[in-house]
Amino acid sequence: MRGLGKHICVWALMAALAAVLAGCTTSTRSGLPDHVRTIEVHIFQNKTMYKTIESLITRAIIDRINADPNIRVASRNGDALITGEITNITRSTLRETTTNEPGTVLITVEATFSFYDNVQGKYLLKDVVITSTDTGHSYGVYEASRGQTAWEGETGAVAALAGEIVRRTVGMW
Image (cartoon, rainbow, N blue to C red):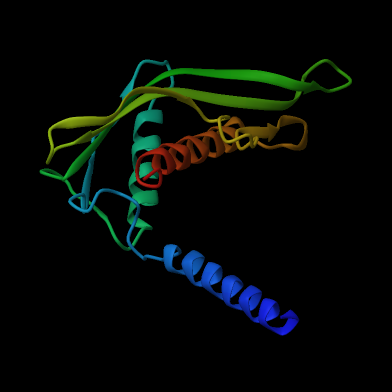
């Protein structure tokens, strides 16, 4: 009886492992619905005083999508569409120097975006508010006291925002 119980346990474990493995599949395709193979990215609207930030964010989103070999950006007539607007940019001094000058500065970019399924004619995401700090990382930080420029903080914030938008649209499925 003891030997039979051991064999039953082994077979039960093997069956459970097989069931788990059968449910685990890998795919090189993105998690998007099957009919979405191309994505249009319209240039974001800029509601701030920062010139060219809309071009930087739009370009960063396109570059991130193009990094996925299973989907591509379409200039028009894409299966899906990403639109958005930059609503605010803030600078926060995190640390001052001994002369009360900004030493460490955080730039935060805020935007809203939507993801529209052109094939099915419906929003998959609509008017989602997002900031460059939503990732929990400080990509928009620059050290003014060490000679870094605001441009370095802005490009870091733009990269973080674009990455989060692509993660929430292309990678969320």
